[in-house]
Amino acid sequence: MPLLELRDISFAYPAHAPVLEGANLTIHAGERLSIVGPNGVGKSTLLKIAVGLLRPSSGQVLAFGQERRTETEFAEVRRRIGYVFQDPDDQLFCPTVAEDIAFGPLNLGKSRDEALAIVDDILQQLHLTHLRDRITHRLSGGEKRLVTLATVLAMEPEVLLLDEPTNALDVENEARLIEILQNLPQAILLISHNPEFSAKIAPRGYGLRAGKLERLAV
Image (cartoon, rainbow, N blue to C red; front, side, top):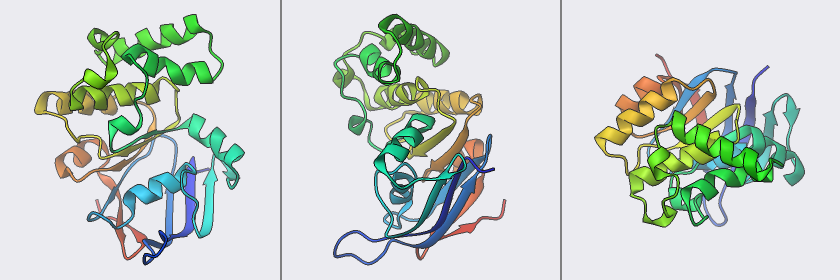
């Protein structure tokens, strides 16, 4: 059974031509797939539809074996699918790194001590312990990107949706991100304009053209 399935998804922004017209996608446990295509074709839109941040004009979103339509149903999906936005500033809003990472576990009902233990564990796994008490908005772009990933991993998702995760990363931090992602167990759906990065993380996948997804040859 797929963890996530999009069936015949269509979507148009107000007063614009459709960006998606019958797009289909499935991803199974442990699978790693890329979505490639030029800017503006609807790749980020598709990820937002997958977690209910946008609603398709037609088609179905199925996650973990159930169709999802309502906000309550998608709230469960967002607990199990971690979405790393293209812009880290859209995701980081607490005063410090530790508070940002603890936010998700606290909302899942963890005690403060449990949440802080998760913070320390995630930061240690990602070799980011030195950022624990830093003020989030003073981090570099690359540091924010890695902390954003930490906030998502703290929720223990089953699927990761990554939207241009190498944005603002220097060579050293990109290498660190590759190492981190290669060692994670989660299924990954990746959008990236960096072909070398995609080849290392998710070499198989889809091309998005004329509103539809087409499987790419490996």
